[in-house]
Length: 161
Image 1 (cartoon, rainbow, N blue to C red):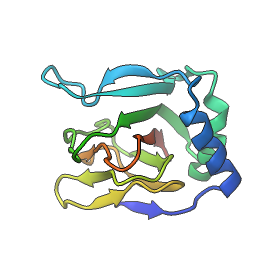
Image 2: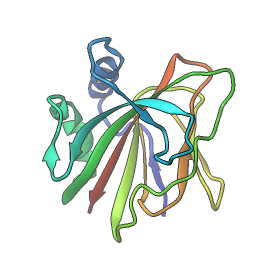
Image 3: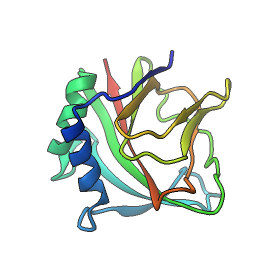
């Protein structure tokens, strides 16, 4: 099942989260978009939670989204920033994890013409600020870049409900 909900946070919270991620002092790190040996595409990332622990001093800015999701346990939280290019590119279908009952939530930080797409049903979910997409982590999906904004920013939450 795929769940999509607009305006999940108060406007003030969504604006604050966007301002933090667009700040030139926020630490991003270069990583492949899809982790395989043949990738040529890279993105900027920031890991908030991994290996059963908080890994970022910025973790608390995610509290409004976590309050919405109400996870029983976290597996990973990661932000992806992908720079714009001249054309939209699908970056590679993948599964976040192969764990039973694990959910993936994608929170869209900024509005742009990029999207998330699912492999088997070709459903496209547009990147709109303060929107969330929730699905089973075993669903094959891909993100894209954008062409109308400097970058596309999304936060991926992997968690148990």
